[in-house]
Length: 200
Image 1 (tube, rainbow, N blue to C red):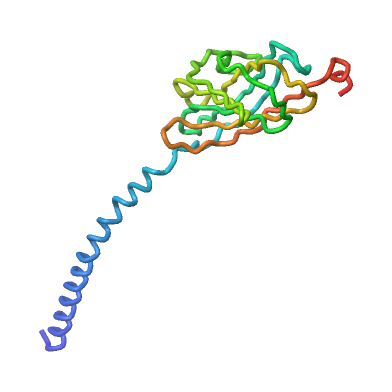
Image 2 (cartoon, rainbow, N blue to C red; image 1 turned 90 degrees about the vertical axis):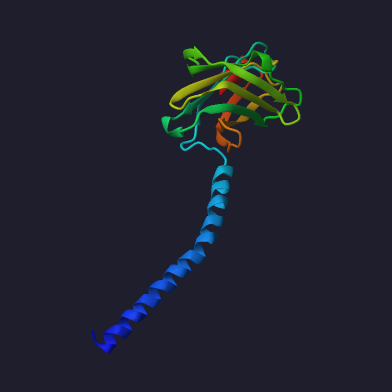
């Protein structure tokens, strides 16, 4: 082996030692980053991969102040949602009537639609926030993806004033920390009398 070749081999050996030393020095930093990344991942809220959508809304009675009405709100939970539907929140956002109230204890939920009713879905806690005009319906257990779900809501009576009423419908996935999704507006139109209804 020539003198030049010996020098080159020595330099390569030194470079290898320096590289290995640098790698060992970085390993503690990598070990410190791994738990932090795991915690950040664990703190991310559960969300629908493919979000639910409102596909239909209707009422059995649409004259102002009528009793015994039922409002139907139908949601499609696609198979690609990847997580179950745990809670649905309905909030009156347009067409405010200060004394409008739901009857939470009469809330029903079932698979299918208003005119193609399927299996009844157990309802958990149903709460009403009168200040926020919000009704929150918890499903127990959560509805699995790939289903169509209809909520049958019972108001104390229809709103006293004619016009279009919009209810914001929000879906919450199953889990402790979740990201809710807006699904659409349930649109209901109420009239003063049958004549007004026929003219529109």
